[in-house]
Image (cartoon, helix red, strand yellow):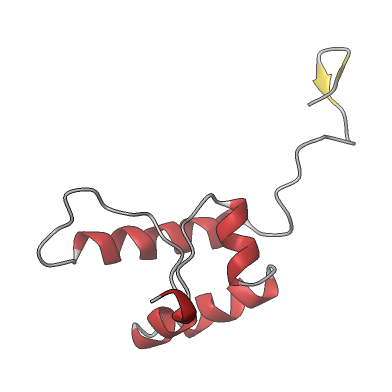
Amino acid sequence: MKLHNNEPSRDSDLNFGPFTLDFAIQLFHFIRSEVMNMSPPLAYPMIRMPLERDLLRCGQNNLATLVVKYGGYESIARVHDLLLINDSMT
């Protein structure tokens, strides 16, 4: 991040793509809920990007729509450093 007169510049080198904090909170809340509900709980839980079918199965249609709006599953996983396991990997 560039500083000018001890203030961040408007042309910041940090770019996390177009998304809102509300979206990120909803996404991570969903992920946390899914991990906590696993039976048996994982010894080493993986923080992975939910697939569209995971979101739709749980009634998170709006969140699934927002993932696409903000760049898609692969892009969101990369930005938030989440493991992405798609159907071809399972």
